Length: 319
Ligand SMILES: NC(=O)c1ccc[n+]([C@@H]2O[C@H](COP(=O)([O-])OP(=O)(O)OC[C@H]3O[C@@H](n4cnc5c(N)ncnc54)[C@H](O)[C@@H]3O)[C@@H](O)[C@H]2O)c1
Image (cartoon, rainbow, N blue to C red; front, side):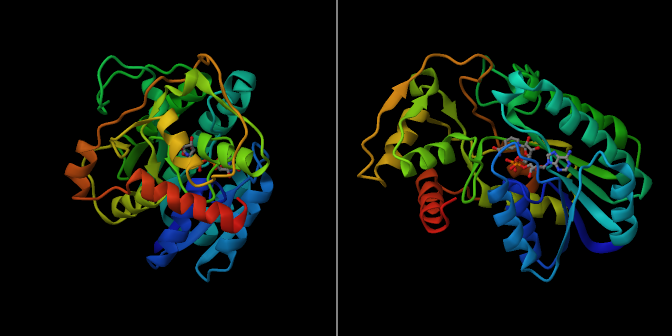
């Protein structure tokens, strides 16, 4: 087994790309796996991949995780000691249109990577779950021990995947962790999520629709912070299994819109207020106390700083 080799699934995805880049800078060898599916622009996935491919310690395999044989060959060839599983089918609203894709790419794919990770006796398995498994709650901030209340097929399949991870690695020597991410944003962000959707509308001078009259709260968390936390969890042994990854300072969409518009004084198009959208959470606000207790002190990037970095990179790269 190669101590410094980490297999990252979903390496051409938003978080997987930033994570791979960061871990390479920390002297790890990264084996990336991604199917480069077309849920959103393949161009942006290829752009992220082209950046990673320039690095010496990165190798890439275009592969669907459900292709067991080929995935096993990758384990045999590279012998990773850590697997960070970020591949999956994200998106809340699309999950009502195509629930099957969520079952296949979240639940079934997770089962395959867990089984192979077990067979090749890796040391650590880290799974990227989602705050959406909490749904709407009565009390905030949401702690890890709150009862899950998934409101849509996406959240349901993420919760099923968590249960699979727990079941597969319980009573094994494999140290496993489940991270529940809260609305991650940053450069090269996903075009199906609010910030990049809005930036793209600004670029094409189109109007933007705000769900729930812009009154949803989101606990936006900068991707640079997320990858630092994952890195610390690779090098430290954490005794708990499930952690929220969030800044714990939610903001209302209308305030975020004002923040972004300030940077584009020429944007004159309309902002259309839409009503409540079924299946969407009204508020995400996580507690990060447990995480900080285990991982140590950490300062989260202020939303204004994170948004400025995101907009600067968007203007530079067109993504
Ligand atoms: N971005 C967020 O705010 C957020 C929040 C909560 C949870 N998450 C979770 O974190 C993970 C990463 O999210 P992201 O924002 O980077 O999403 P992303 O869609 O940008 O990345 C996922 C990548 O996985 C690949 N993929 C999908 N199914 C695959 C399969 N069967 N085999 C191989 N590759 C496959 C896709 O091509 C994509 O590049 C996802 O599991 C997502 O559910 C993300």
